[in-house]
Amino acid sequence: MKHAKQAPQAQAPVPPEMVELIRPYLEGELAADEAAMVEQFARDNPAFKQQLESRQWLLKKMQGVYGPRAVSRDFQEVADEKLKYTTSQRAVEVTVPEGEDELPAAAPAGFFDTLSARMGAAPWWIVSGAFHALLLLLLTLVGMALLRAKGDEVVIVTDLMKQKEPEEQQEIKKRDIFKKPVEFNAQEVVTEQVVVTHEEVEVAEVAETPDESDANNARGEEGLSDAFLGGTGVVASLGLGGGGAGAFGRPNSSGGRLRRAMQGGGGKATESAVDKALEWLARHQEADGRWSVRQTEGDGDWDPGVTGLATLAFLGAGHTEKVGKYKGNVQAAIKWMIGQQRDDGAIGTDKKFEEHHGGYGYHHAICGMALAEASAMGRVPETKAAAQKAIDYTCNEYQCGDQSDKLGWRYKPKAAVGDLSVSGWYIMQLKSAKVAGLHVDPASFEGAIKFLDSRMQDPGKVKKVDDAYDNGQHRYGYTERGAMYNTTSIGILCRLYTGSKPEEVQGAAMWLLKEQPPQWDGKLGQANGGGWPMYYMYYTTLTLFQTGGEMWKEWNDKLKGVLCTNQRKDGDFDGSWDPLSPWEKRAGRAYTTALGAMCLEVYYRYMPLYR
Image 1 (cartoon, one colour):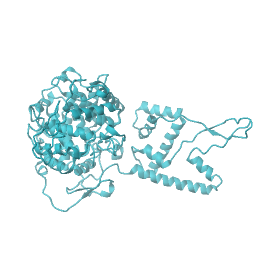
Image 2 (cartoon, rainbow, N blue to C red; image 1 turned 90 degrees about the horizontal axis):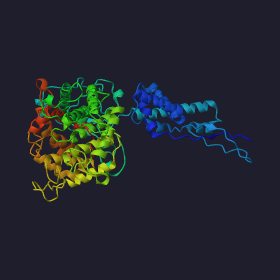
Image 3 (cartoon, rainbow, N blue to C red; image 1 turned 90 degrees about the vertical axis):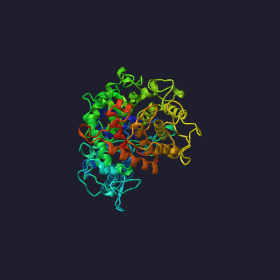
Image 4 (cartoon, rainbow, N blue to C red; image 1 turned 180 degrees about the vertical axis):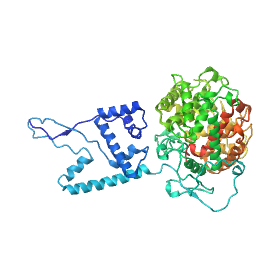
């Protein structure tokens, strides 16, 4: 009986979840137990081991040419695309059936097998020269892919006219955080959209992360502005398709934040105000990681919700559990929120935290949203696990209705009727979770849309103020159809995140802009007998940033004047915003300061959906 030359041995495919661990393993981001798991799997699975070693080899070659570099997010994809590397298959000895000479020779399994078969008879010096030329080409191509700019847009500075310094620049105390002004080189970054600004640009000579660490080491920790999750229907519409629209921004350095802020309409004054607000929040964080409402001038026990808001404010400026001047504050806040989580995933269920609303709806919504965004930006396994538990509870245990009958959310689980104020936070939570790569039940999105439909104003039943913009079609009520300022701003934003186009909500957006523009007034956004000015400004700012155009410019110009001018600049209040209305005074200064900071982070916190 004769032996065949060799035939390939079939190998089990490598699980996608293991392939996804290659990049963080090479980057050294995995915990010791996870790294050990990867190494053990490589020992047990030759195909995975070969993938791991090929990418490790490629990375070392790249670092040898270009010096130390962090592994980009799409390193796995780039390596596959550029190398076209097919795992070599081990040959095994097989027998030939009686009466046959031998088995047909197997086709070369991979690139190098093919090269050998084609060039086996060629002189060694030709083979060597061809191989080294190919290697040099591959290194160049992969190097270009790994080192390309990650999403910063070009800013062209024009000197067409000398403009008067904006009011907020004149009145605000000097708080410039950019110490090394240099000429900005527009060729250093890549963009799909050129933005022209007339404001002078100053950036650090070396792009610095908030904790002064090297920007290359921080890359990948700053957000998900380039996320592309694909899909169709509701999920794709929720800010998840079209190149990552609606995903988190990437303010990984002071210079990067300034450029993004200026593109959206901010500048040095807004960035200074954000930094002072974060300084104030950091000074007033409790030793256990939370923000105490009663210790920051409030009189309610709403600590979980306010802690979630403060955490979102730090995340919005690029501070995560791993990166940033305030990473310790973020770590402590997340640890405290996880400590408040029940085994079933609910957060903030302690009776003392249900004091006003008789439920923990806001607490779980905001804390779950903060954990979802933190898990995306910091990629800490414990945070991701807690975020997923919170999302599962939101979809399976808390949302009104079940399966195809799901609707909105309210103060307590499975309420008979949802309200748009609470539901807005839950829709934003699910959006952040989906962008972060967490599992979200599609039925929850469908239920959210049905709930929005049930809270819209009936067309034609609104008193028309101006026929040019007002048709009432996208005004919203609280628990039933209506036309209220706060809930309309929330409703429009949720509509945009569930598939509506800006032109579809123009009328209601203009109604908000004309009827309730930014102003330092405790009655702003008044609803249900009480004003929530910061709450209203936060949601309307997000909404009009997404609609864009002249409405956004008009709103933003007024917003900057209101917030930068009225931010406290004295003593221990420096960096905070006063609570204005009776309800805000109950929530406390940490509440208003977190929301004020998030208003001024709008330029880079979430990417535009349609621009």
